[in-house]
Image 1 (tube, rainbow, N blue to C red):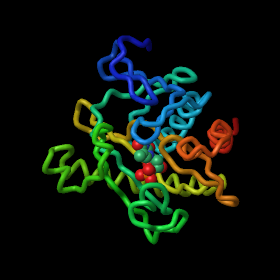
Image 2 (image 1 turned 90 degrees about the vertical axis):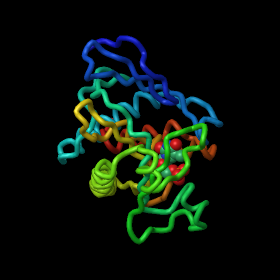
Image 3 (image 1 turned 45 degrees about the vertical axis):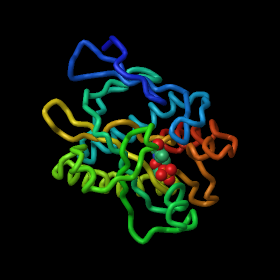
Image 4 (image 1 turned 30 degrees about the horizontal axis):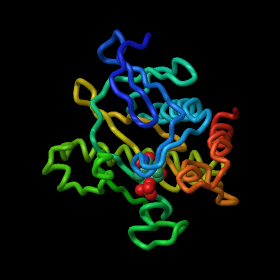
Length: 236
Ligand code: TMP
């Protein structure tokens, strides 16, 4: 399958059309941004790692019966996916308080949450991805009630599976962000990526951060952290 015209360029990936109207190719970049694009940089080799890690995890989730957009890894940075219209919501799950949750609610980073939480944010950089609730989603038509139920159900299943999977390789899944797409026939599938860009991963023993917080917070050893996640997951 060959890349045809570029359909879209995001902050971390490009999306290309293919000759099949139901398929497109995502191409992972090394570009990194934080704070809705205010902080910019590159993380050498990030695109290759995020492509591998995402596809590996999507494959595992598919095997668990979770529908995803993943079709086939084409190369180091390129993956064939089902063409979907992206639901304009970021779905955030948290197991341990960190980041904006700690800031907003005054809960110390690292506090275990008594149950997983779920937040919806509107995908709109100009507005700073504001948090929205289900009433907002229905009122503005960003998704239907049925779609939101499906999204919540898939999201918590993904959390349970990934939490256990990462625990087995000595990593705490602190929180993560998912995005969903709708296929031409109206089916909701997991889309976008699952990577150190979109998850917080802490080493279980040392609580060392192994994710994009190293870039966001200028902690150094950013590339090493991404490589460590790849190594623990895929052994490479
Ligand atoms: P937050 O604590 O900054 O709200 O982030 C929660 C999780 O969502 C964290 O794992 C990082 C991820 N995330 C993204 O993938 N994209 C974003 O734009 C933001 C703000 C967070």
